[in-house]
Each structure stands twice: as C-alpha cells, then as structure tokens.
Amino acid sequence: MTKAPYLRPVAAYAIIALTLGVVAGSFAWVAGWIYWPFVPPPLTAARMIDVFESTTRKHPGFRRNHAKGLCVSGHFDSNGGGAQLSRASVFKRGSFPFIGRLSAPGSDPTQEDADAPVRSFALKMSLPQGEEWRTAMNSVPIFAVSTPDALYQQLAALQPDAASGRVDPAKMERFLEKHPETRAFHEWLAKHPASSNFYNASYFSINAFRFTDAQGNTRFVRWSVVPEAAYQPVTAIDTRDPDFLAHDLSKRLVRGPVRWHLMITPAAPGDPTADATRLWPQERELHRVDAGVVVIDQAESQIDGACRDINFDPLVLPAGIEPSDDPLLAARSSAYAVSFNRRTREEAQAAQPGNSRR
Image (tube, helix red, strand yellow):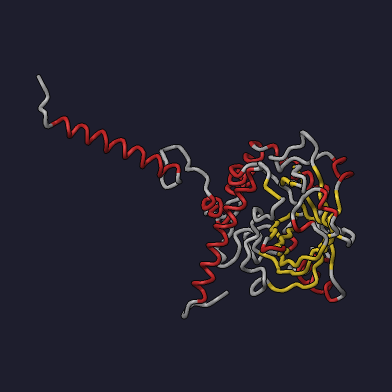
C-alpha cells in the first residue's frame, strides 16, 4: 500500500527536528548544561570552584582558595641578568613596582596558620608600555597532581561528610591509590617542614613557562624566589598565635624591607614541561640565573588592601614569556576568573544599602 503523500513532509520535518534536537543536546552536554545517565558532566572552571567551596562553609567575598592572606607592596630591582633568557621588559635593568599577596592554601579565611603546611606568594608587577607580569607561587616546587581532573577528584575526596562534618579518610585513600603521582608532593613536604615566617620561605613557579630572547631563541624555564633570610622551620612557640605569619611579617617590616632573589632555572632537553608533579634534575640549578631582587617594604590587611581586587592570573604575561603546555596553567587561569567574579559580586551585594559588609 502506497503511503499518503501528505505524510512525506511530516516525516521530513520529524527528521529535521530530531537532528536539531541531537545537535542542541550535544552542544548542551559539551557546555556542561546536561549530561547522559552514568556519564559525569565535563569539568568546567565553575565546577572546579564549586568543589573548592564544598570543602568548607560559605565565606562570601573571600577567595575560594588561599582565602587567608595579606597584601604586600614593593618593587623588583632587575639586574639585567634575565635578559640572556628572555626579552621581557621585566628583565631589563631597572626597578618595577608590584602589588602582591602572601597567603596559605585553603578556602577558610579563619583557619589557624599552624594548619597550613604551604605558603604562597603572588605578584602583579607593573611594567613599561602598560604590560604586567602576574605570577602565583607556592613554597613547594611541585604540585600534588598533574591534571585539572585529578585536582577536582582530590578536592572531592576532601569534601566533609554531610552527617558527620568530617572528611572520610577512606575516600582520600582511594584517591591516593588511583594517583600515585601525588606521593612526590607528600614526600617533599615530609622532608621540608613549613617555614616559621612568610619571609624566610622560598617560592616556586611550579609550572614551566617558555622564554623567548631578543634573537628569537626559546627555552623552557621554571623560576623561584629565594629569601635572603635564613630558613627556619615552624615551632610550637610560633603556633601559639593563630595568625603568626601576618603578625611576624608586620613586626619584621618595622626593621626594614625583606628580600628574595628571583632565580630562573632553564630546562634541558627531555625535562618535563607539562607535568607539574615532577622535579627537574638537581643539576639544573647549577645553571640558574639570578635576575634581581624582589623587595617587600609594606604590608596591609587584605580586607581593604591594594591586593583585594586583583586576580593573580598566571597567564597575564609580558611579551617574551609564554605559557608551556602544562594543562594546569589554563585551568588555573579560568578557575581564578570564576573565583574573582563570584567574590567581587558578593562584595558588591554586601555594599548595597541594607546589607552588611564583611
């Protein structure tokens, strides 16, 4: 029996509608708006910040990580030595002002300093021709995981149980078994206790970056800032004060500025540039270049200090410095942006009439 002619356009429209529905649904799934049963949604910067938020109670207006810290300011005295590695204006001889922030990892701005095994140092340097160099460094030279997905899984394992309010050790144990690369990070921490102060710790770029010199030659590097003050491990006496890191820095600055040397370490062929969990061979440090001195001469509260509204995006770079192929760099940049947008929106809402500000 022949089908009625009027059914053919209906069938055609149905096929078109189905096709459009599949395309739209696929787009929505890729965008993270929906997901198929038993298939987790793709990792986005918003989901990454969501899981950071889930590790503690709400703290409106604060950064979702490194929530506790203080603002600092000073300058970088470049000695010109870095110009042999990069044409970036920051490595030309001269002095460049910066606004920075010293902090400890974690989403709770009320945590005690004794609970933080890591220190962090972020900088925003103002350079000629309107350029900037923003960098966020940690006091450990490697990262615990090598991919954004692994970081998300790690944070998910640290989510407190809804009933008990405590982290389930079994969840973290399963994560560690699945990610043996984290062992290097924990072994380094075990051998290097946290510093007694912000100003006697070294800070590391962790990720690799690509430098281009004036002749167009490129090389991968990591950098660190090494303190002039002698390292000392934290003691029980230090931790009697829950805020000893900020208090000690403020007292120290009364006597004068604190200084670090910016040291640039070039990679050799075969050194990993896309895996932040792996150290480069120790002999690379024999060829590191002293590019100048980072000087802090002032500190102030983060509540109303100059660093409060700065997003220390590690991909804000001057010409002559580019990101490597490390996937954590793009993830950090996008997650920082989401955190910045959320906390500044909360600040604006709190400032509206009838609302109380933190």
